[in-house]
Amino acid sequence: MTDIELISKERIRQVEEEGWSPKHDATHPDMTLAIASASYILDIASKSKDWSEGWRNRFLDASESIWPFDEEWFKPTHDDPIRQLVKAGALIAAEIDRLQKVLT
Image 1 (cartoon, helix red, strand yellow):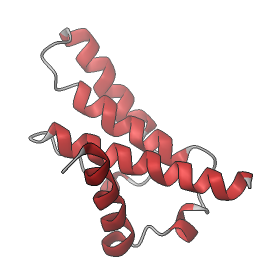
Image 2 (image 1 turned 45 degrees about the horizontal axis):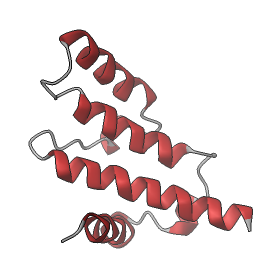
Image 3 (image 1 turned 120 degrees about the vertical axis):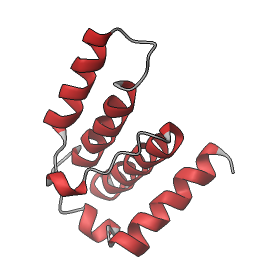
Image 4 (image 1 turned 45 degrees about the vertical axis):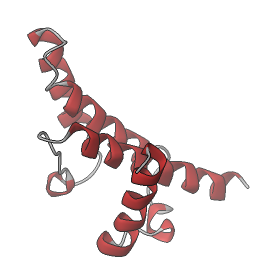
């Protein structure tokens, strides 16, 4: 599957299996879903050996400190960085959808 197909499939899964519908997403404050996406991105960046230990620690601390939901909902997939980026992409898509409804 392409990147867009993976993200779309994950967004559908979030709605159908987790119940995170656009109606539910509309209850979150502005940019909450985008911040959740950033948490996943920073978390997976903290696992990359391309960054110094200092940067990896900063990324990990930031990912944990900005997660906007209950801790139980943060489900990183450290063994699969693509999967984690797909989750982040689906959260971005959800935030875009939410904003489109708010701004139109």
